[in-house]
Amino acid sequence: MLPVVILAGGLATRLYPVTRKIPKALIPVAGRPFIDHQLALLQEKGVTEVVLCVGNLGRMIETHVGDGARYGLGVRYSYDGDRLLGTGGAIKHAAGLLPDAFLILYGDSYLDIDLEPVEHRFFSSGLMVLMTVFRNRDMFGASNIVAGNGKVVLYDKTVRDPRMEYIDYGLIALRKSVFDPYPPDEPFDLAVVLSRAAAAGSVAACEVGRRFYEIGSIRGIEETEDYIRNRKPRSGKDSV
Image (cartoon, rainbow, N blue to C red):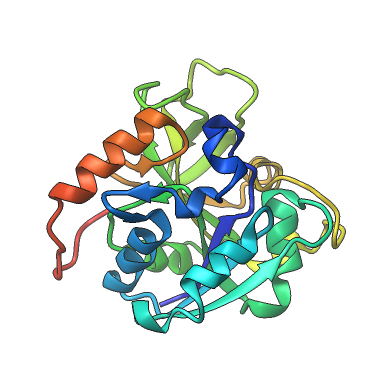
């Protein structure tokens, strides 16, 4: 299983004042810090190695998670430094800890899907990037993806297009070299990288039928908490 990079360095301003004192990863959800649920789910899905990209209040996350042994994982850390580097800059900064290919997960996402089919689709596509997509039709936020023929044709969070039926599901597979054109230790957004790669025809699409959960808002926390309290671990292979 490819290692997973978790992007957990943001300020989480939508959850102020709570996240002024603790990072979003440590917000209590269903009786435990959210990162506990996230890491337990990854271990259940077969992941063994995780790199946490942290920034704001990141030491609190490292103090809680440690080396990951109690989750059955190996966990390492990449700190932004004196300024936040954004989601793209944080991954570029962590490059020395990463192999040629890896998975990316947002720090507020709970994605209860099997990862092996995603990896298989990524490698069989022969493309630089794979994005998991959900046929959203503006159900869970604004749709931002046009997909067809196994590719992401357009990905844009700022421009509305009537063809957009899909949304970024939150799990991405890519090759590290996609970041080569971007400067080190400079802030930039992962969305910029993905948008440019999609425009170049370099992004495969993997449609997911199971909805995503997230803790980016109070409503999101409530829905995620309800789902976690009622889910049963699945040892079999799920289709995506």
